[in-house]
Length: 145
Image (cartoon, rainbow, N blue to C red):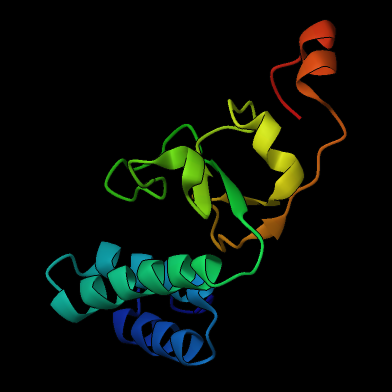
């Protein structure tokens, strides 16, 4: 793909292969490339949605409750949203949050915490740990970790 980054068919093959390996975040990125190159490619849009669904489904199946921080780049395309939550967010198994400055600090003790940098070339769930508590975050005046 480095030799021919506009090869739509190649991106499609890569995306399908990654999807077959259950690497949904990687497949999602490859499908993003395919849909950017050929916006009228219906199957790529369908599989992009499927990758997002399967990633969410995997999180829902984890034994512990989950908290996912999603970080976007300044030039984020609003059409590719990651953060969707159930109406009863406080009782949701998975909570998606746009910032690591979270209103859900008290829930973090019981949850597996993840970070995804959604606009990276390879957006993947990464384990996220923080050493700060809401109290010492406020005292230090920091807005980020």
